[in-house]
Amino acid sequence: MNPSDHWYDLSPAIIEKLIDDILAGEPKVLSDKNIMKDIFSCIDLTTLEGSDNNEKIAQLCNKASSFVNQGLPFPAAVCVYPTFVRSAKRFLSGTGIKVAAVTGYFPSGQAPLFLKLEEVKYTVDEGADEIDFVISRGKLLEGNDQYVYDEISAVKEFIKTIHLKVILETGELQTGNNIKKAGEIAIAAGADFIKTSTGKYLPAATEHAAYIMLQVINEHYLSTGRKVGFKPAGGIVSPQQAIRYYVLVRYLLGTDWLTKDLFRIGASRLVDNLLKELSD
Image (tube, rainbow, N blue to C red; front, side, top):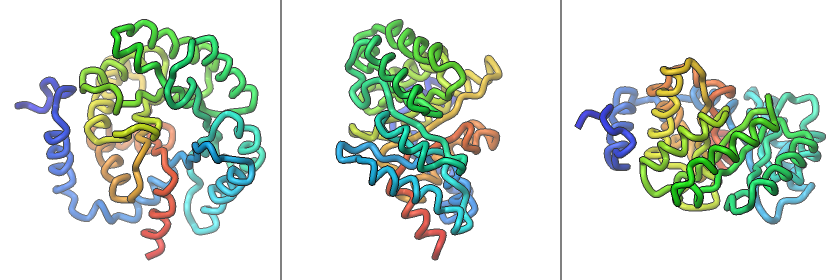
């Protein structure tokens, strides 16, 4: 089977083999410390727990701003719940690190659009630099594609130039074709990024989903010239996992995408593991 034919229906096993073949040509890439540093600058350092509080947000922001003292780049953003945006903005003042917030009644997406828009409005008023918005997967699975398009479009119309990362929650979409469709809808509705997962459901980020999403991004770029970003998130813990996504982006989209403007990784534990690898 030609990998370019019906790529959205390729099984995870075939996708894994394709990625392994790519990496086989670069035997040292998984331990490349320069790539690890590049990845560091593309991380959305994240906490999304029910136990989050202002003290924890302060600690996370202090951690994010301290990496420069170790000769490392700042992470791209700190990602929090809307209620902590104002605090995170204060703690990160002067660093250039963005504050992203999850919206859309994260993680389930189960709320009417007017409530989602109120949440987005609140988040923007609090000062968020970026919006990570979760789609209504149930609507997509029942075939109501227009609803999903309309909700994303309404959010983008409201936030205008604020970056919109649309979370597909690929683990709940069941098929490659659904992932492809969700990505196409999100991009058509104005997404600046498409993101794999909330990290709250299994499977979270997978290379299979990433491959499909990157193909959607590439097809959109080839047909329109507009570059859309990609963010895997959920369960990416080891530097080697992160590097595999990095290489997949480079292979399918090219080096232009390997900046924080077009590539992010949502992570928490990954940062400590990167620091350990870089200090060895």
